[in-house]
Amino acid sequence: MDNDSHLRETALSRAELLRGKLLHVVRDTVRLPSGAEATREYVLHPGAVMVIALLDDGRVVLERQYRHPLQQVMIEFPAGKLDAGEASLACARRELLEETGYSAREWAFAGRLAPTISYSTEIIDIWFARGLTLGERQLDEGEHLDVFTAALPELQAWCRNGEVIDGKTLAGTMWLQNVLHGTWSLDWSQDLGASAGEGTAG
Image (cartoon, rainbow, N blue to C red):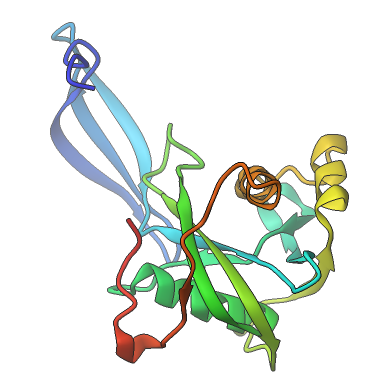
């Protein structure tokens, strides 16, 4: 909004706190709207995708994966981080194939979500895929996950009773519900492959 100047902070300097294999953490010194200074620590993130893959019978492809920080197996939609210079659709196509073995005939960009706005720059592009063909998974070394399918009512029940607590999957379920009920529409395109120029979303 144009009238947000009384809320905006101005970055003055940055210090690097950590650069690991996954996380890049920085501390910015900022000037507050009041004129005072403060620090903001957060994670720089290249962005990610999440894929809501629809089978012909309306069921969706899901994963069960152990997440070490929470010491728990989570139910999630397929998702993954963008490689350097990688287009959003290319990443969605790659992650779906690598993690589940499925490839899709058609794709539709749905929207974006920012899962942790207080401490990360991560933005996740939400893609829908249909016309699925099952092949061989290509999991990364050290990656272990189960792939299964579920109908929308099952997924909604898991979100309601707390079996699903992953934020991106909760948001994806909202998208799925609205798409399947006809409330929200999608602009589907045939997957012509990288040579046709998939581009980025948005």
